[in-house]
Figure 1 (cartoon, helix red, strand yellow):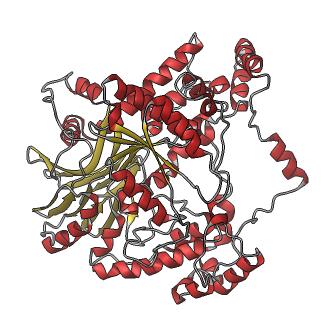
Figure 2: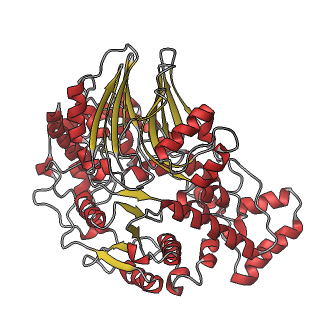
Figure 3: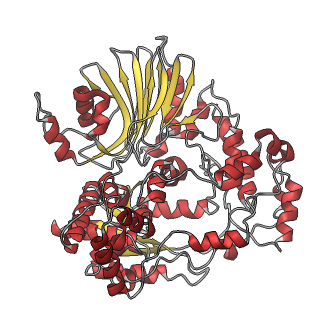
Length: 611
């Protein structure tokens, strides 16, 4: 993912060129193929290039149109042929061979903000309108590309790498306490616009920011439609339609050169690999693909590499299993390579970084299977209720009777009746799991008990059939997941792409009748039954067999030796140590959050030398 950073000054004063040069140096890891710094009339920027889409990628930024629009961004457009066709309906038509950035600018010049209703892909960008003296910043619906900003009066800083913002003199390293609180409580922040730093904001996925003398406003520009269930006459039509839309998503994401593929022993990543193998094989380019499996051997018996090997062999893909000799939480946390821009549960960050470096040595692009569980792990109860209310008795008999006949069991209802019964007789403690080791002053200041209680009761679902999936697609969950694969986190020039989170795929799956297609991934299992090994197609959804933390080698002197006065602002360290001892020294992802925060705070102190 290329790196970009810029500043827009509505007061017309020049942007500090030395600041841009320093930040360009810090962004060099994102773009080893080129750097440029640019200034003009109150606007300034720096850009570092990572080639992933040549020749569909502009090599310098800003990209300029008619001295009117100036564009910076990390942009990959899908369905380019369809976009060309729509633009050609009126004159003038775009010339052939435009880069993604040029094509987006052409669409923006034609339709303005309404272009966002007509373009799809992975993107974050900033666009300066010289005639209107205004800046817009946009982040795609899923949030595959991050975008951050900070405003100080008539100046707005923007970019896709959080760490470099601390290099701006006006921007303080003061923390956003609510972000820190949410991390300690839940492992993530409930409010997607917040970052770990008080002065820097995150543009939420699917949102647009407009900055001008008259306003600074952020709003959502896209919400997925809630449509009637798709009714096709033959079951084969559903499978063919799914394979077609998935092939479009994979094809648009495959680079022209080598492409890496994540391949676990599960159905989602294997499905992406199968479609990629079909597409590359049709053009004689399968030798440009290589599958990588992240294995946990020799720490425990991990079935994923063996299953992934079966899939790779059947698909004719080169395959490599990535393992490590040691498993140490927070390894190298005191070094300058500790890149994490925010505290998170990436306790094996150094291991993950080494694996990403190996993959990046083969290709700057890797395709994965993220997103396959959201819709295709649905339940049948909402669908039954909808059909019942509509009086569609024949459809109930066909869908539910057909499922019973084929599977010899009823589909999972998902009505929550068992859980409600258990809770009725054994009421749940709404503060179960609440950390007892929070600083008392910090807890009282932010009323964290109430914040915990509210986070345990999410808002009602807006989609009648796929409520939890629809909510997850709109609440920023996937953006927070995908950000941890971004080069701004890993420090590795590797771009991850997720075909199963393609808008076309999501809109298709949200229209699927839950029964039979969304029960236990029926759709993808049947679509892949001739493409993948039976062991994968028939495999139930399987979590990791063992918790890696149970097999980790802990550094000597833990936990007392880690103490630092700065952590006491948030955590009662003595009480945390007591809690850890009470659990007989066992570790959990939740229990290690204070250590993650402490080590991250120390890393921030090291990076502050950049100022």
